[in-house]
Image (cartoon, rainbow, N blue to C red):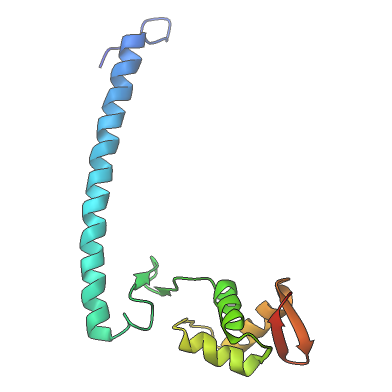
Length: 137
């Protein structure tokens, strides 16, 4: 790579060469990332086959950096799906049961409270009566 001039500026040719070098390095890193991603997916598939978690997580097991299972949908999206499929108001207990049946995983010590708070906080859910919620119309 060309050295900068004494006044601290670089020539256009030197800048273009530097840019080309960075692009090549980026391409190599992207190829390596793709290769590692494919390898990781194979390992996750083997883990899911042994643990039996593949079916309960929609066929796709993802782990965070800390090793926790990552759900394919957020809790809010899962709650919305459960209430939409029900087509009628449900109690928090029924919602909780259906969320778990859908394959949503949580390590929360009090998952019921988390679901209840989300139903109260999110504007897309409407309270019908005490402990009973539906989608807003």
